[in-house]
Length: 89
Image 1 (tube, rainbow, N blue to C red):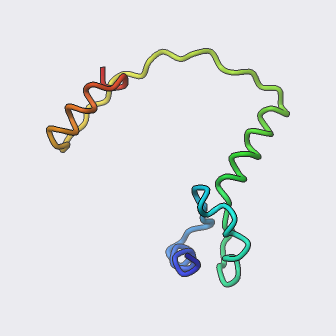
Image 2 (cartoon, rainbow, N blue to C red; image 1 turned 60 degrees about the vertical axis):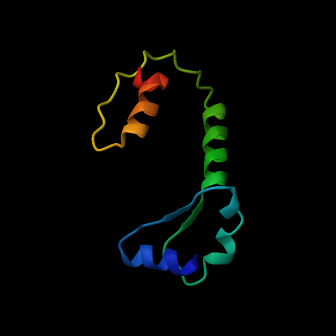
């Protein structure tokens, strides 16, 4: 994982998000030799939720359903599956 983060930094990444619970505790052990910040995605999400609560923001009103999107290049099976979902109405 550390080598992958180093590769991303060499490719121009300014930070790397360690996404998912499996990686949440690995950040401190991987930081050595990685020239960019490693962000624990779980901790970042919790902090964001805490900030929203602290700001006292209320829930937004329900939005209208999104317009269906056109997909191209899908297999017939996947296109049929997506057509049955609420977003594909």
